[in-house]
Image (cartoon, rainbow, N blue to C red; front, side, top):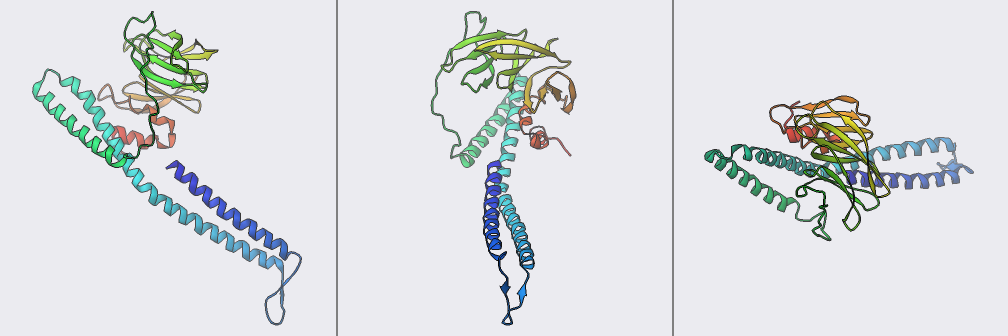
Length: 310
């Protein structure tokens, strides 16, 4: 949608600029002479002609912009329908994913949940084939890499990934409680430990990331880690009074999901406010954290994922 807006705005600008150039060129011609408009050779001042042309140009500009906006709205309508359907299916599948483990050992409920889940998966497959048959992204290369290091006590469980501008990649190994730096060949060149499980990670500068660290007990913090000459260096810690299970950064602010709420913080750790809260289950406030990357859409994303009413 954003690309459509840009292209229409650019088109409008080019049309109007072209007209302005032509009119200005003509007016310069007219500045040195007068125009005979009747058989009696009545001379009209150039200023009157200039005002009339300006009026016509302004009227044309308004009508062109209106037409392009109407055309843009028509093109956006089906995209909005597809977006809302994606949000709805994501929401339904996520809650089934959360519900299925809770009914294990209960045959009847497990059967109902599994059947319901299968139906939603089939609906999602049909939807994807119908609307996303032409892939926007193409996988050019796929490979399996071993990012385990000798000091790891468990299998690697990657909970977050951040790509740096120089081609290096940061991965969060949740179970082993480490952030690992990979080179362009995806080999571990540096690592940095934290005190609890890593739930999420986001970049806050080209060389610094914020790591959501939480053990579901008493440890709830954001660990800042900087990349300096291919080495990971631990920085400040932001201590929180709630769980820290999702994190995103936008325009100098951190948006942190606790599992039941979404909070806004400054990068210095000062709480700005609570944006959303739902304590009906433990997982109501996890999946919405990525929506803050586009603040204009926050309210719509909340409503789509979490069924917030007006």
